[in-house]
Length: 464
Image 1 (spheres, rainbow, N blue to C red):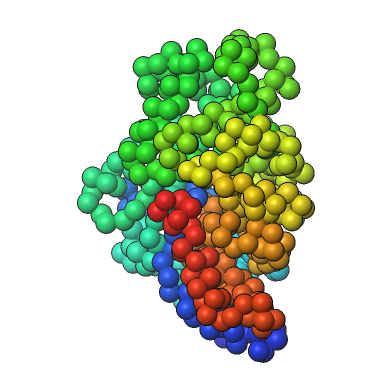
Image 2 (image 1 turned 60 degrees about the vertical axis):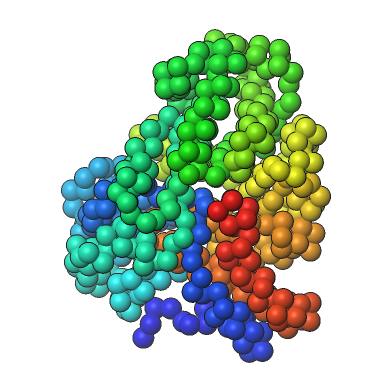
């Protein structure tokens, strides 16, 4: 018995399901284009085996450990945050005994896909077979077939983008290039540590940026020149996009004198909380200006209240599964930026959201009008079968298909990449199958769209 049904996620209606099957068959073998994610270039630079199943499946994936934590499993029990896990088998047994918690979640689909398709495991994971799973996975991880570069090729990945601080030397990317390995792994410019005054170590980061670029980054002009210089270096290393994870979508368009005065207040620590938000908003507009100049695609994904659990943040730091979505305004928040750059045909800004209520009310109408705007796919909490379907249903009638940019997996868990893309392809096939069955599209149009949604739009939007 297989873990996965071959018709999973397809419509229950037989006629529509048959169309969805045909559409899926036409795209399932297409390469994976992953323009936004959090895998580590170091894996591919060093090409060493993943150490154990826990390091591979549990530790890097906040989808996994946040669910366990919500049911009373402590992060200490999972050895989260440790560089070396003392007892990985014990952690795996804890994970396996709680695997039932993932019923109905996308995580269950992703994990079952990896267990079946990569490791040949067909019995559902549970406490009783935890050791069988652990031993099977651990043994295969030590074989050449499971080295990171081999998996990259096995997954049929065409492009894989990492996410990197402007302060990163990109040494691992340089090592990949120097190795002669024929793969396209590219950095993404994520300036949050340098544009968010509330980011830990902000002033130290500004100082480090000055050292790295030989600019006086404690002046407004020097600060902007230094950011532009780092963008140019990233571009030389293959980068095609920037990424901005702001608390809100607020943008500002201050005059140069006012912006310089605000920057001075920020540096001196005399700015109020409202001023810090204005500064972040100004920096989104500055980043859009730079994108128009250097051609980098701009991604904005606001609306996450990060590190909501103060106790976990104090003990473990950032990214411990306690980031919570919040309502997000786009129409008024983006107006200053759009007043300045919204009509630029040579600028691309991709908008993401954690607030699904904005799909039909704000995001689709904005992207359906402004030449510079495109809609990013459902991500994070909505990176799911139902989330993807809601996005298509709510955004398509106003924005169409061609103001969207395909799918990105946004993952730290390398083995989940093919599973996530498979879910996206099945949902798009299901949605398009329904369009054909309801005579909104002809099947030849749906076939063309299926390919565009899988590879065409993402290649075009991200200049890949």
